[in-house]
Amino acid sequence: MGNEHQWLGAKEDGFIVGVTAFGLYAETHDFNASNLVLAALPATLESSSPDGPEIHILKYPEIHVTYDAVSRAVHDIWNNESATWAKAATTAGIKYDRDNSHKIDFVVHLGQMRAFPGYSFETLANRDDYKRKDLDQLVPATVEMPQGILVEERFAECPDVLRPDVNVEAITDAIKDSIPDILLRASAEAGRFSCEYLFYSSMAELHARGLQKKVMFVHVPSKNSEQDISTGVKVVTELIRRLSLECLE
View (cartoon, helix red, strand yellow):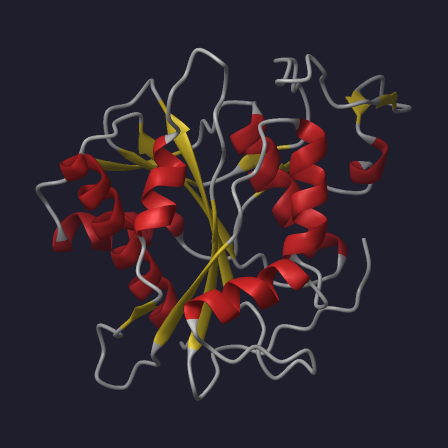
């Protein structure tokens, strides 16, 4: 984990949000709703405030459901020289220089959850106890700490629980008020698998650099109809609008 990245805040010419999603969880699954919602997101949004910035959405390629793929993705996501984000910016039709004039202001990770029929805005992520095997039939490699707990060595100096530096509960309540017909909740149970591992790893990267944890994780329901995807886009775009204003305060 390096310390080269510096948050620049919302730019005068736009607020840039990076959005990620996962690929298939198993050969028996024929879709991942998070990736369907990601693909349907627009490249730009107007702010919900007259004084708010134009919002640009950059889409990260789907992340393979392995712990190693998550680790590699996190390194790239927070890398100032990421060719992946530069390519995404070109696809979105926005300027993205490598001299720090344009970088990601906030990252929203998307994942799929089958256990809840609505949308879960995760409030925290745990460091330890990832015992479910990934698609490579592996779990994260750990070392035993003096306290007798098993921890990934790269996370040894990180807290056992990390939370984003935004008020997830308040954001959830605000979005519930704006779209009351959609089932939403703030959740503290992200699943202890690839989704929570990504959320923790992403926040740990920023924590280690002494930077604000400008990252959220949203679980979308495991549904793939056209209406379901449209609803997912509505939820995620409303969240992104709220985040753009939150980061300007």
